[in-house]
Length: 237
Image 1 (cartoon, rainbow, N blue to C red):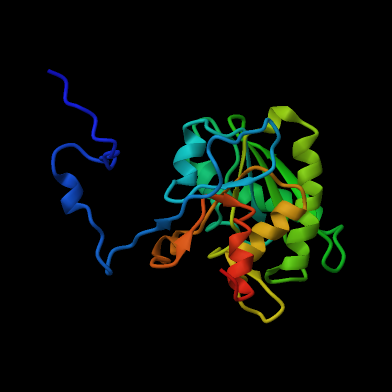
Image 2 (image 1 turned 90 degrees about the vertical axis):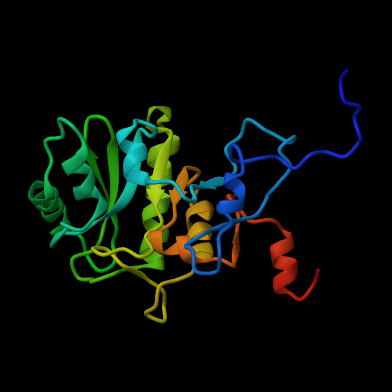
């Protein structure tokens, strides 16, 4: 006989057997508290939001051909620690390497003046890389540079559907191309996302590995964040 419905929905199970009891993270664990955002029943064909890929591995997703384009930074001095060189080493058949990537950037960097930003294109065959070239006169990216770069980048992406889907680094926690605010410190992730979104970017963004340790602070899976966050900021509920 079928069991009668009680009217009370059961809590979804994540793991088989009783593993869920063993997977309850303690305060010492690197973890992410992911908060629900939006109504899943409401959907439109437009591309209005930036999806944030919490817990995902960018290099693995690129090698698995989940993206056609990558957005990152590049400079004319040393890109050995940058994701662009890491990807070149891992992609089968890629003819780029750290030396040729940097030499290509050097050839265009000579024409830059002040804080002018150029979006470089590297054809890695399986992935097209759009790299914001850091001005040779600057040791770090600034938020103003990021904004100018993403405005140019968004025009290049949105006019070519064959370059979508696209993924971008967060430009935070970078080794080769650090991003700083007006105070010389790294800006918040929210500030970076706002600049990307207002500039027209609608691809995915991968948080830095350091953000995997942000608990107990809750995070959202997409940007713009819910309006309730601004009400909390202003003291409302």
